[in-house]
Length: 573
Image 1 (cartoon, rainbow, N blue to C red):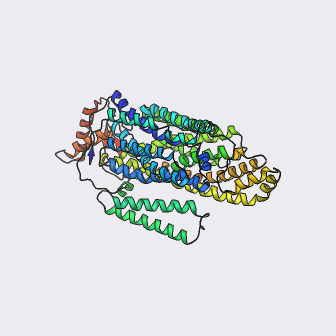
Image 2 (cartoon, rainbow, N blue to C red):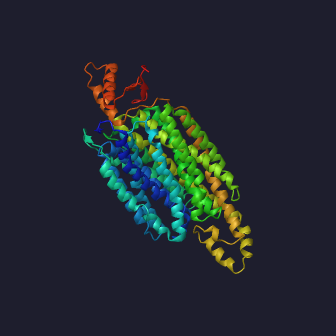
Image 3 (cartoon, one colour):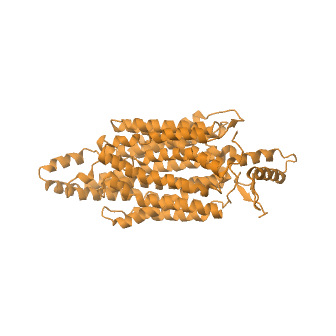
C-alpha cells in the first residue's frame, strides 16, 4: 500500500498546497472551455461534418475516461505529486499541438492525447484533496474551487469566442501554456506529499488494453451506425460482439490479477455501486449539455462564438452557485443526502426543459432551463466523489476516487456520442423531409442561391449565421429540433440517477484525512489483543493526537458490514 505523511496540516499549509493544485485544475478547465464556443467554427474551417464535430469532443472524453482509472491505480502505487505534474505536461503539450492541426483527423488525434493528461488531472486532483482535506472539511475550501471554476467556465468561453472573432481560433490552444508553467513551479514548491511503497508495484497492462478496446469499439459503433453503415448489419455484429467479449475478458482479468485496474471488490459496497450508477447520468448532463448547447446557440440562435459564451452563462452560474453553497452547508451541518436528491430532481427537470427547445424559444426560458440543469450538476457531481472517498479504504483511495470519475467520464463520452448520433440522424431526416422548403427558399436568392446550395450539400458543418434569409430560418429550425431530440437522451438517465441516490447509505462524513485514516488503520492492526473495539480505540486516540481534536464527537473506521471502510459516528456525542 502507499502511505502519505500523517502530519496534520494547518489551514495555511492546506492553502499553500492547494495553490498549485487549483492552478493545475484551472489549466485543465481553461484549455477545455476556451475552445467550446469556437468549436463549430474550428470544425467548419477544417472541413469537418457533424460526425467530425462529435469525434473532436468524444476523442478527448474517451481517452479521459479510459486513462482515469489507470491514473487512479498509479496514484496508489507511485508518488502522486510526480504523477500530477506528468499529467499536466501531457495535457498542455497535446493542447498546444492541437493548435497546429490542418485537418479534423489531426485535431482528433491530439485531442485524444490531451484526454490522457486530462484523465490524470481529474483523478489525481481528487485523490490529493483527500490526502490533505477531510470529507467533512471539504466545503470550507469550496469557495476557492468555486472561484477557479467561475473564472475558467465563465471566462474560458468568452475569451475563446473573443479570440476567434478578432484573431484566429488557433490561439485558443495556446492560452493555457503560461498557466501550466506556473502550475508546475508552484506544485513543486508547495505540494508536500511523501509517498513510500510497501508492496511490489504491478500494473495491469492486459486490463488497460481490454478496457480501451471495449470502450473504443462501443463509441465507434454508436458514432458511425446509421450513417457509415446500418444499425443492424455485419459491422454492428462485429463491433458490439467484440466489445462484449472484451468486457467479459476484462472482468475475468480483473478478478485474477494482483493489482486490478478497477478492483471489482469495490462493487461489493453499496455506496460505490450506487454512486457509479448516479455518476453516469451526471456525465451525460455535464458533457452532453455543454457540448450541444454551444451548437444550439450558434446554429439555432445565430450567435457568434463570443455571444454563445455569454448565452451559456446561466448554466455555469447554476453550477457554481449550487456547488459552493452546498459545499458550505455540507461542512457546516455534515448532511449531504438531501442535497444530492434535490440535485438529481433538478437534473430531471433540466433535461425535460431542454428537450423542448425551439429556434425561437424565449431566451429567458432558455436561461432558466440552463440554470436548473447547472444547479443539478453542481449539487451532485463533486458530492458523489466525496461520499465514495468518505467510505474508501486509504489503500484504495486512488482507485475508488478515479472509479467514480471514470464512470462519469464514460457516461459523458457515450452520452455525447449517442446525442451526436441522434442529432445527425435527426438532421438527415429533417433535411430530407424539408428538401422542397429549402429548394423554394434558395430559388428566391437568385444568383446567390447556387453558392448556398453548394455549402449545404457539401456535408461541412455550416456557419448558419452567415446564411441569407429565408434559408437561415429553416436551417436554424432544423438544428433546434435535432438538438432538442438529442437532449431527450438525458431524461431516463437522470431518473436512474435519482433512484440510485435515494438508496445510497446515509453515512456521516469523517473528519479525518486519508493520511490520518491510514495511520489509524496501522494503529488498529497493531492492537495487541486483536479486538475490533480496542483497535478502533487505538486508532481514534492516534488520530486525535495528530489532529489535536478536542470535541466530544469522534469518528470510528469500521471494517464490518457490506460497505467496508464506511464510517460511523461514535456514541459519545
